[in-house]
Structures are given as structure tokens and as C-alpha cells.
Length: 154
View 1 (cartoon, rainbow, N blue to C red):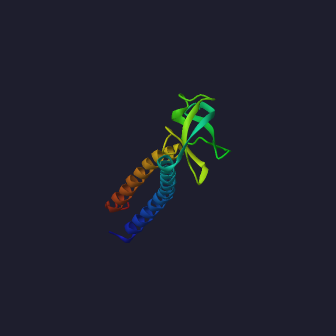
View 2 (cartoon, rainbow, N blue to C red; view 1 turned 90 degrees about the horizontal axis):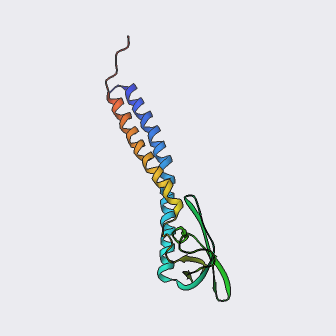
View 3 (cartoon, rainbow, N blue to C red; view 1 turned 45 degrees about the vertical axis):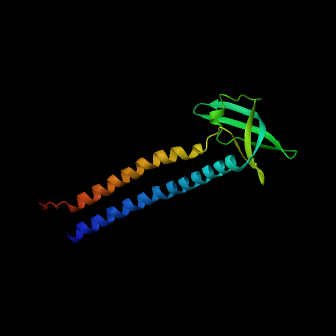
């Protein structure tokens, strides 16, 4: 391999590696945050105290939703609603539902039947994986082109 071909190979691999890191780092962060949120919700459902809540907002907005509830613990009102999209159709405003909350932090609550994975994590992961795949194809193309014999100049 000539020195020129080697430099082209290194330059191409460097650019692709930079783009790969540019995509992989945010995807890793999103995955970490989504996993932490999932673990928090599971911990509250498994070890939390049960309470009855009243639905204060329940509406579908295209592909998203708004779902909020209020409950009382120790004479203080608390609210929540994360992951409540599956509950919108079965729990209109004013209906009651069961929630579980952390006794040390009642603001940390989860409705029984709510999503365990945060919805904001799905789109970046589904978009990011094809980008990583394309980066892999780009690496292959750069390596393949660098090993081709250079044509003589006329």
C-alpha cells in the first residue's frame, strides 16, 4: 500500500470514527437514562405504598397523551403521571386508580398499569441504531476503497 493510500485510509477512518462517536455517545447516555428511569419505576411498583388517586387530566394528542393524577399521603396532596398513556382510554378525568409511591419521597409515584420504559427513549434509539449501521457500512466502504489499486494517471 502506498503512503498516499494509507493517508487516505487513515483520514477516512478518522472521519467515520468521529461520526460513530458522535452518534454512539448520545445513544449511550439516552440508554443509561432510560434504564435508570425504568429501574426507578420498577422499584416504586415493587416496594412502594399503595394509594388511591384521582385522574386530573386524561387526553390523547395524536400519538402522544397527557395523563396526570393526584393522591393524598399523610394529609399532603401529591401528583404524578409519567408513563400513563396506556391508562388514558380506561381512566377518564375524575376516575380513580391505584398508584404506588415511595414513602420517603411521595412525589416519586407510578400508576399501576403505566409504562415502565419512558417514551422519550424509544425514538432516539430507533433512529440511532440505523445511523450506527450506516457508519459501519461507511467504514467498510472506506477500507474497501483504500485497498483498491490506484489507477495510473494519464
